[in-house]
Image: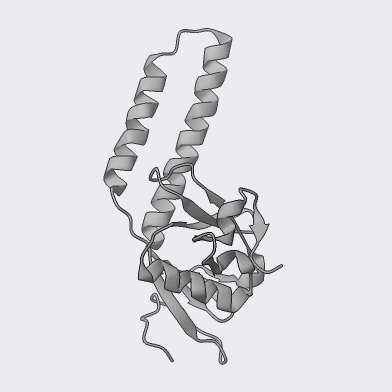
Length: 173
């Protein structure tokens, strides 16, 4: 087995083992949620009745609700277990590595760079890009299972390969 405690009800296949468990750092989760709610409150109070303002406010509101939903799901999932075959989130969502897509963005769940993982175009998990040992170990584990060069740290540029592009890409090419 492994040194990591799997979520309740999670089962590993016979030849599957946990390579790493990454606990996402959720700094200022409550503050970010407060900011989103405050922005929604401000938006709903500036409606002036014109068609254009209602369209813009509706679009921004939908975007803010989507971000809030992702924040809550990520907070609920807390961590991600990287196995040699799957990703398992903290609330026991098991995803085959072949089904995972990801993209890198500087736009802000926390005003810092993040990597957003998707399972068949549905939000799965996001990781804040950190400069610490735990994040680097998680990226090494992802590289080991996917052999995707984007997750290998480039000593020449001092960055990961995924930081060069903002497009959605498959984990397994």
